[in-house]
Image 1 (tube, rainbow, N blue to C red):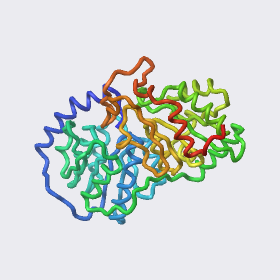
Image 2 (spheres, rainbow, N blue to C red; image 1 turned 135 degrees about the vertical axis):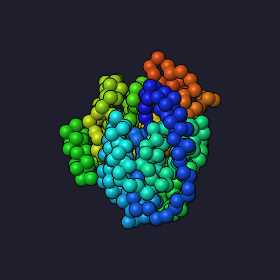
Image 3 (cartoon, rainbow, N blue to C red; image 1 turned 30 degrees about the horizontal axis):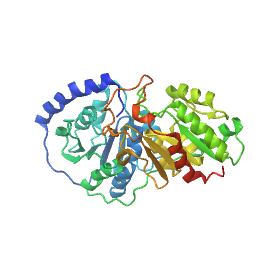
Amino acid sequence: MQSNRFQQSLDRYLGIPLCGLLSLFCRRVRVLYRPQKILFIQLSALGDTILAVPTIRAIRQAFPDAEISMLASGTNLNYLRNCPYIDKRIRFEMPVHRLLAPLRGEGFDWAIDLEHWPRLSALLTYATGAPMRIGFQTPGQHRHFLFTETVPHIQGRHEVRNFLAMATRLACPVQALDLEVWCDSAARTWVCEMLTQEQVPPNTPLVVLHPEAGRRGEPRRRWPPESYVALADALVERFDVQIVLTGAPDEVNTAAEIAAQTRHRAVNLAGKTDVNQLAALFSDAALVVSGNCGPMHLAAATGTPVIGLHGPTNAAQWGPWSRDVGIVRSEMPCSPCLNLGFEYGCQALPDGTSPCMWTIAVAGVLRECERFLGKSEL
């Protein structure tokens, strides 16, 4: 779940006592009957939602006649707009109390919390009144008291497999491990029209750079902009590709800074795409380079080769889940330091980035790019 420090503090210092108090009223009875109504909860993190798709799919396939709902942020629901495994989409909005009565009125049989650490999602799971409530037991987070079934969240195990442990606990066979996107024709048409508008020659290979990898103004996973500039110039000169920069609306400045410094024109689409248009763009690319963030996982879900840049994050746990991937890690001894996504081991530099991200050399990233774009003749 993405949140600022105030929300994290509120979630911790109010959420933990509430979880403990309400646990006194919980009945922990093992209920594994065939459900008619199932709710998934994933409040905001796009990457987590993408990595949970194999689990959602496995539960859908095990219970094809059940009505499956998803409580999530607007971005997540846009990503799931064409998902065939979800029947009903419930938008997570503040204030939270307005959700309580509608959720309880749905009469869910199962409520499945896909979050790792927030107490808020555990409280919402409890508020549904579902007789079966399953979620992660994450060390030190004190949120599992409200679940009737728990699954250990194991540090260092890929998050896809952590999620799949829920399907296994619910006796749902797992038939496939691949991620998915569901780009509609409108998103694909938008990409074609935008590239034409930007005067990108047909059949020119696209390399998409997604420079921001932060959490709402927390750019400690971001590779320095000057490194992206050097990489962009080298890729154009060696492989004659078109560089495309992407980012959220609040990430436009970083992409614009990079575009302004490259020797060769880069197309800046930061702030111009929704999640499905971004997926369609990734699908048309020859390669995507990104730090660890939701769009990195979105790119992996399209099947396009992805290079993930990891400093604070553990590539074994959060790396792109696909066959065609490259991983470039920091070599600092304290890297990685993150398990849940917020427990950074050092202070950010003045530009907001982490020291470990500066140790990732452009030459190393370029070598990974060569694996997918072909050997340079220079």
